[in-house]
Image 1 (tube, helix red, strand yellow):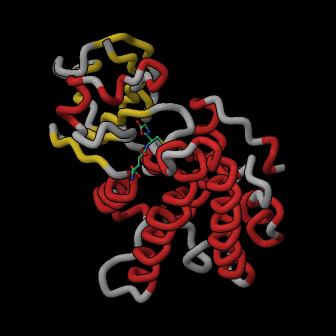
Image 2 (cartoon, rainbow, N blue to C red):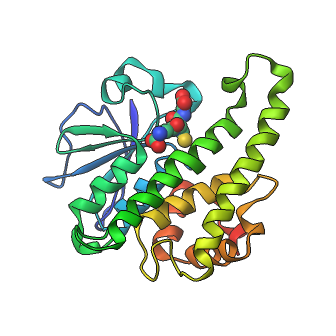
Length: 242
Ligand SMILES: N[C@@H](CCC(=O)N[C@@H](CS)C(=O)NCC(=O)O)C(=O)O
């Protein structure tokens, strides 16, 4: 059984359901289903679904019991990772791809610059940097045992990663010195993605809050209604950003 929570629009239901059943609430089809775990890589897509005002259902993938590796889930996401988005019966995985898809389905929200806008390549640049560099380094930092066959070297892997993460945060900090948001003066999906990764980075020695411009940006974003609402749903404490 997946534990589902339907959000968006006006109604919130708690329910238990099998995901293969047709999804109909009050005779309305729920368009988006997000397979998530609180404060995991599903957080950025969750911010976006909330921001665009989508009708969506959250389906908890119980990481504690390794449900992301269950045969049922692997049919949707052969990588066995969180998140997965199902839209119009099509499942996709990889959080940046999911983010882009949601943005493109809601172009009126301006969360991705349109084709021809000079900010569009920068959008791809920052999203790729966040996902391929910062997120990838964080994954090694938090799962160091996957990156060594000698347990005694785990502290070295962690220490090396802390430095690499600080380097990535420093590049982002420089970008925010003269820009309100990653792309300039407009909020985009990249900012939600960065907020997710910054939250994960809080326990690190050179936390994002030790970088002046990044810290004040995160402080501002932590007051954004979407960030507040989604963090409330996922039980994420925003006080460290205040
Ligand atoms: N590149 C993937 C990574 C997703 C990922 O690693 N998710 C983590 C949670 S944050 C996960 O599912 N970990 C469980 C596992 O590796 O078994 C994405 O961005 O969607």
